[in-house]
Image 1 (cartoon, rainbow, N blue to C red):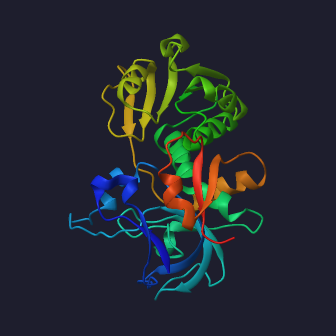
Image 2 (image 1 turned 45 degrees about the vertical axis):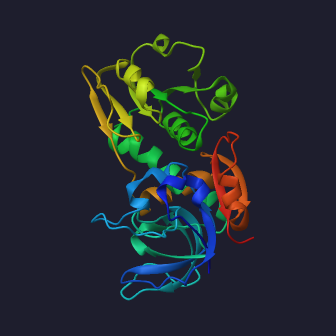
Length: 305
């Protein structure tokens, strides 16, 4: 099969190569999926799990990518709940070869059925962005109707889902980003927008929940805006500052079949729009990843037409 691999961390995206690899073999409770579309998170090449296994042994050459949509092609021993030929989507284990390949082996529990009326490219754009937003808002942020939320990066792949879900559940959402992101953030449902380059974040006043996708100085300033009992939720590592009378929570997204089902149902009925920035083929993916211009939204690799 064709797959993109990386071998040297120092090379970054420039070290990605399209090569021939053996087809994967399913382990116990695995399925092999014929990948139709794959997502890629630009920070993956900085993750230790891309380069080493759980006991810190080198595991390169490794295949990046951890979200996908495709069709089950074979079942491992003991696998239940899925069938050959079934459309699925989900995320792979961080320490296993990923989704920038024509086939992958993945634990069945990491997958959810993909309805026939949802395009594979849309399905591949959902798992990390959707689960990150869902878990950050509800599992860790304990969002309630009537609360005020700051959604950093509100026009991006994750932030746009945060904005839409928070609005659906009755929050007042203040999106942030660059000036060029204002209209997109408002179109995704933000009630207000702060241009972080030219406007003062502190002018928004006290909020109940900050969903931080930026960290650094913005994260520290955001912590001071969290009112008593509120939460600062981060996916960019432990916060450098904590709310004076609230909680700071950092987390890593986890697979969850039921939550994936909730997310894809919202796409089907129009409550949720995924934000795809561009779609490229597997053969063009290395070049696309190494382009220098800023792309809003998620890059999706369409493995099969």
